[in-house]
Image 1 (cartoon, rainbow, N blue to C red):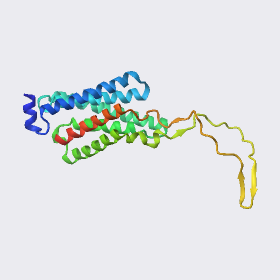
Image 2: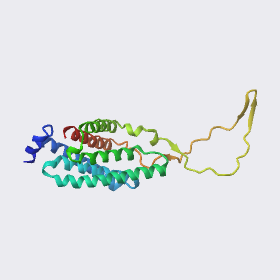
Image 3: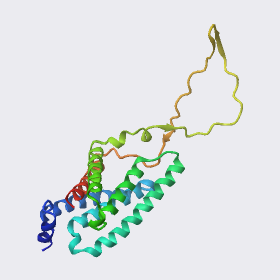
Image 4: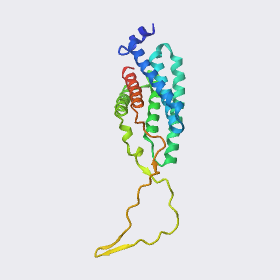
Amino acid sequence: MHGEMAAMHMPLLPMWLRIVWALALFVVILVHAGHLIAMSGQHRAWHAGHTVMAAGMALMYLFPRMTNPELYRVGLALFVLVTLTQAAITVTFRVREGALNPLWFLSTVDMAAMSYMLLAPTARPDWLNWVFVVYLTCQAVAYGVGAWDRLPVFNHRVPATVATTSTPAAEPVRQHEHGVTPLTAEPAPDPTAGPVVGLVAHSTVGVRVTLAVMAASMAYMFAVM
């Protein structure tokens, strides 16, 4: 019955396709839940958010709004809360680390997309639906090819040691007709330096694929709603 009623309102989302998307999202849940358990700190919180997001998408595919309106009302409240929490986390780490982490920012935008998706259809203008379709399609491609892994914020190094306040000794210099040139060489990079941000992009194919699948599932849902 669910399949017939859904087909009446979403001809591009028959029940068999709902099940396919849900199964793919269950795999996403398993992967991120595994990382949630195995990791700590920012990575654990980030994977927790994606686990919740994948679970929300799986439920949306399996249980259409028309026959489960209460589920969507509860989901909306939950994802608004999660979105606000992630926005606060993003700002907190921006202040603490001195750089905006794209992973936290994009995760917050994705959570906002989930909240928007759970709104009543009359509250969602078509043009904004398609904005999210384009954005999430780009997200799926970017995750799939590992584009976020290459951002400078994940590779730039910062000194791990703090300079002392003692007065440095005078540098030996070499005189020539155009001025004075210090003889000291450029300081060697600090081998103990770390990335600018605490949450770094995953380079593993498995995680990238799951993120691409989740973004694609969201884009498709927006397209057929």
